[in-house]
Amino acid sequence: MLTTAVKRSGIYVVAVGYAVIALFPMLLMIVSSFRPNVDILTKPLSLPKKWSAVSYETLFVKLHYASYIKNSVFVSAVMLALLLLFSVMASYYISRFPYKWNNGLFFYFLIGMMLPIKLGLVPLFLLVKQLHLMNSLWSITLIQLASSIPLAVLILTGFFRTLPNELEEAARIDGAGHMGMLLKVLAPLMKPAIGTVTIIHFIGVWNDFFFPMIFIQDEAKKTITVGMLKLFSEFTTDWSVLFAGLTLSSLPMILLFFFASRQFMDGITAGAVK
Amino acid sequence: MEQTQHDRPRRRWLTSGDRLIHLFPVPAVAVYTLFVVYPIFAAFTYSLFDWKGLVMGRFNFFGNFRTLFTQEPFNRMFRNAFSHNLFYFAVELVVQNVVAFVLAYIIFRKVKGAQFFKIAYFLPRLLSIIIVGFMWKLILNPNMGVLNVLLNKIGLSSWTHAWLGEPATALPAVALVNCWFGIGFFMLILLAGLQSISPEVLEAARLDGSRGLGYIVSVILPMMFQPLVIVAVMTFLQAFEAFELVFAMQGSLGEPYYSTDLLAVFFYRTAFGSNAGDTGNLGVGSAVAVVMFFIIATISGLFMAFVNRRQAE
Image 1: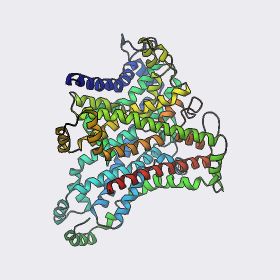
Image 2: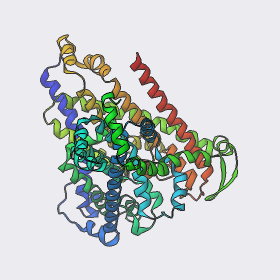
Image 3: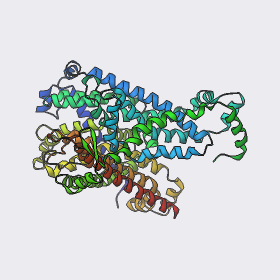
């Protein structure tokens, strides 16, 4: 018979053990980025004697890191703004009006949940070419937008269905139109659902690598994730710079997470389970 | 379903109100149709034609599929990649989800510092998968990488490997890195599942004297049917569309010697060519996409049918 104390400490060994496995590689990445390359290669496990930000300087001077960041911000911001606008409009229509075809419309969006868009890569490639969007940030913005719509519509429709009809009836008697209804009555109530959609898809679009790799070759148009590829082909021996690049690319997401860790974790499970 | 008493005032209001409301779903439908639905289904058409570079050639019936399944090296590589996807799926199903469940259970039982652990386990999920790949590539480097240095330090020099360079260890290494990335996410889903079990049921089982592993297997797991199926389906989808991690760590050839090749990597290489100098073939590439489509649709469909039958019983 095991005593409770032994069992307790067993549980702690597992809990702490996995925390180390989860965090150590990230800490290593951050710490190494502030160490001179020689140090990393000769004594990778010892703590740094002096900290230096030289590697970060290299990123901005020798690579287009500032423009990578600018491009990533552009794609994420435009994509999220359009996603919220389009999917709120569609979900409002699907959930609040009694038309017969609304179920069909809902299922049409559901198709996109099960099938990876990657499988449409070849037609997508030719489509982007025909639309003259190769090397344009709009290509990845639109593709990300399109592939994010199913989940966003699913979450927002589910949310709209939980709101009582009485809310709108009252506003309608006061003479509100559809737009007024959406903006004045429903929008303030939608904050949690909009937060969820924003966070899930921000993680997705900021971190996406696949589509930028295919559609963006122009150095000035690259986003952070594809910028990494160049880093890894040109600085193969300078690990300090490599780690600095990795750290800098992950930083915005990690910082945001510390301000809103709860929303991140709730959001991503809501997205998965719904 | 709409309630009847709402019907009459609503109808009147609709016909008298602005018709512009019908335009509301149009932008979403248009973008989604053009950039998701059309490409996925156009791949079917593309797979039936010959392609000369980016130009569609003559109609070729199932010629591309014949090439894929009967011609060297396509047929061999397809089988090779497919078996790797199965292996990848098996590792994720067992390692990733068992660890995720254990961690979720620890947090569910309110160990001290639960909130910290939850955040720590979830953090890797915030990184881009390409960054995860590059980071672990540095850690697993045979000479300077931290893992081998660590093994040498604690006297396990015989355990060191060129992890990503040896065919025997490369695929398991990549699969485990994928688990590292995924565990926090699946832990949260399983935790949500645990938290949705009614406390009365747990209490009753406790009073019956149910304890330890038996308690988990006979009380907890049966109540977790729904979340476990969701996790299985998501693990499957993830494993069969996996691309980025292999691409980041092992390149588009699934090195060494195609030992880490996966269907999506094979698809990419077949369609667009690789840095080994072979040019792409959009027809055969599309055929690979269509076959992947059927594998994914069939297995997901079976999962869903299984869930529905189980719920009907």
